[in-house]
Image (cartoon, rainbow, N blue to C red; front, top):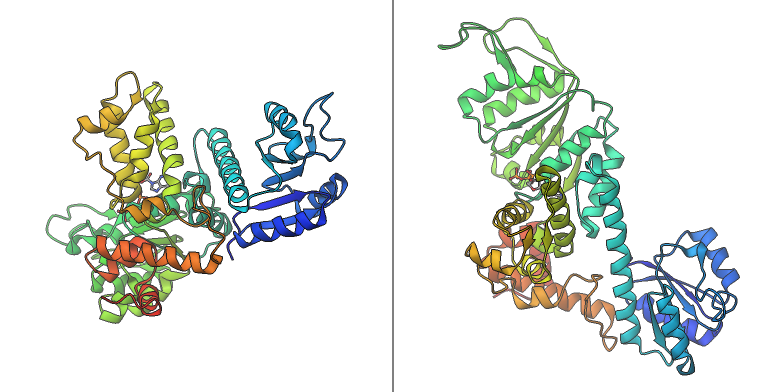
Length: 467
Ligand SMILES: Nc1ncnc2c1ncn2[C@@H]1O[C@H](COP(=O)(O)OP(=O)(O)OP(=O)(O)O)[C@@H](O)[C@H]1O
């Protein structure tokens, strides 16, 4: 079961602890229940700061209407939701004015509890992300890869783990999802960060030029080679060579690259003296390389050489919760660049969230920049979006909008059905939406959903979704 957040429930009624703890666990939260403030402090020592505290209002001395109403310095920075009896409504309102996030009255309605808890946790997540972004005016290292979704956070953690090692990395995922951002972050956090980061777009260089671009050439090697020229491999010496779109590298070139990776040396085109280099290779592709290997378009031995650790990015449409933080970060970049303030109206934010982004973050960023460019006084509203002729109707299929990813702030809560049943229903509707959008193209649909093609086919079979 996923970990949607860690909740500390403090209540002196054992029956309530058991019941509410059970409901919340069913919703995928990690819950620790304790009967007193002292036990809560002990729990904090053992298990660290919770993401949320649920506190029975009647527990002294933390709630004292005569003094500071709510004083929990030990839990600073973490939202506190007060649990009250009916008679304590006035006090609860006072507690909120003193900094509690919300209150909920006993007898507690499980649906309401889950909604209030999710809202509070979403707020903490956002606040932490804002603080993180503000703390890093120029984002570097893993922080440059922005977002709050589970998959983005996992990728950031992975970058931090593997960057300092010299392991080769293959970054896969749809176009515009930040594969180059990740590769750059791997370099910035590595021991090679003072060395060069050289990026080669293997698909953009004509096949006949790629060899001399990578290996360099000596004077007279071919018509037009009127002087010696260093290749990109040499330029990357002591640093990182980023091979973008490696899936598009012509097979004869793959053989030559394999030799370099095996031996750490190569001959420039037309040259006789062996060049030694020390580079870390990070590769990226939006193709399914394993499939290419099977089709004979990519050499298996090279595939295993470059693979090392794989990082897989997800299509933006599978993680819409990243959109607000990405927009916020891009707007701060624009502000820094242009020395101008921007603000994004709620209706505009909503529009960005409800649109599908087949071009992923690249398209999101470009659209935001276009809209910002024509905004009056930095105010970005639906009017600017309309002026640029974007359709205003949300184009995300209704079930993708109204049923956000499990664990996001507004997931509808239904305790009549088990968590597994609800997760399955959500999976089915997302798969159906992706198949409709891609006109039943399983490879595209799998990409959209951030699954492997094989993974999608298994799910289609399991849920009997074949048309
Ligand atoms: N998580 C992210 N955080 C910050 N910026 C991002 C993120 N993802 C993408 N971007 C931005 O989106 C644009 C495209 O990113 P990038 O070039 O890294 O994508 P890519 O996956 O390598 O695309 P392609 O496969 O087309 O080369 C860049 O401007 C990049 O800064």
